[in-house]
Length: 52
Image (cartoon, rainbow, N blue to C red):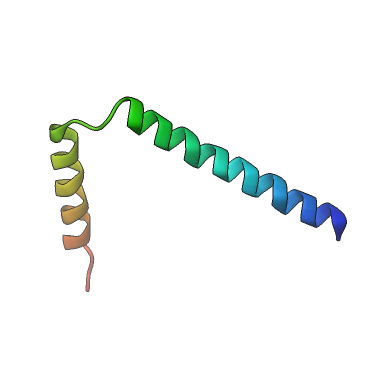
């Protein structure tokens, strides 16, 4: 039980560290307008391909 709690805490801390690294990276080097346009197009296409 204690080991499981420690494992969950470590996983949470690692997840938070990854989140911080992503935010720091995108703050330091933001996406270009071209990258954002491609991301929007890609998301739209992937949704369009769904067999709703």
